Every structure is written in structure tokens, then in C-alpha cells.
Image: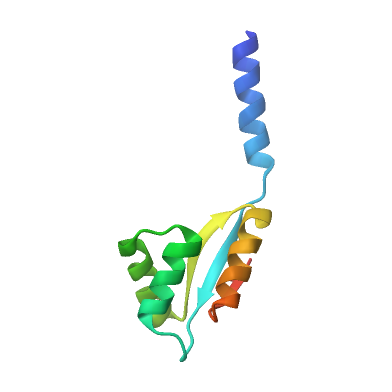
Length: 91
């Protein structure tokens, strides 16, 4: 086994060990579609179409997973969404 192959296996192994979390956005009766869409674009880096689709999913299903990643990266995004008046939670 060459060194390059060992290195690639080590990287893949490290990626598998990182636990992924999900940021969920919940429906409420307070925020407008425009506000939700703007906040998803601003904090989750969604494009306009993705943010609009998530807003509709939240509206129709009560919740939507809007971002997936490491907890430490999702925490400030979740805090920003909460500060903007949205209902969000990391699972």
C-alpha cells in the first residue's frame, strides 16, 4: 500500500468519525414567508429557491431540516435564527 493511498484512507476515516447534526426550522404563526426566506438566505446560505422551498415545507409540514453539519458550525446559525425570531433546534 503506497503512502498516498494510506493518507486517503485516513482522511475518509476521519470524515466518518465526525458526527453530523441537523438544524430544524419549525413553523410558527408570527413570521412572514419573506422574513423566513430572508433569514435562510442570510444565515444558512440558501439561494432564493431553496429558501422558498424550505419555507413552504415548514408551512405545510410544521418543520424542515434546513442545514446539516457539525454541531459547532450549526450552533451560531441556530442562535442567529432564534435571535431573528424564528423557531429552530439542533438535533
